[in-house]
Image (cartoon, rainbow, N blue to C red):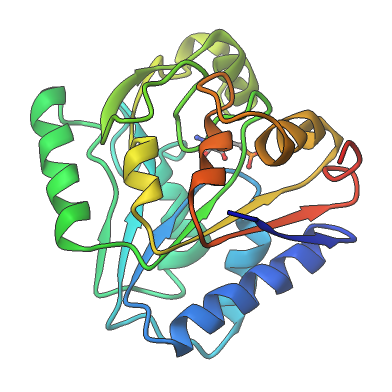
Length: 235
Ligand code: GLP
């Protein structure tokens, strides 16, 4: 299926476009919003918090969480969501994988059941420099649901800027799988900056391959991509 690619000047403009996608889904009756962390969706969340959209009857389901971090750890994805969205725009139910559940099999099962019970109407995604989505690193079996991931060295390095030192960066995460993501009715992926340009090109124009997890989005029939000019520079 052809992806709907929208090229914007910068993140600020991307946030406004991202907001429009949320607003349309909302007006069309979306109840369950799949949410992502990272710097990419922040401008969209800013627009949401400043809007009059009310999520107090809605459900949110987050993509991933670090294993070993409590919800109130400042680097946990749960905490990130509180700061950037939930404190200002509470949902009726907000689900994030439980990073403190040391029983991975139980956590995977629990989270897959949450997704099955709350089919995602709109899933927002960022994009890793190596083409990962959620924490589905290159090589991940696309048939997996929620699973425990060993983070790659490059992702650990990229994320270490948020921690005092690299030793403190979690080595594992729980992440929705590519199969879980593809079950969403509508997918919105945003990517900004020159360091995303190669991944954007591979995602949109390359073959569908486990080397580039985001390339599986080509198999979905309702994908909106919002990128800035720098991220679009190799298209
Ligand atoms: C992290 C997250 C992804 C995110 C990606 C890009 O590893 N698990 O969900 O999309 O990195 O991060 P950023 O948006 O900060 O560029």
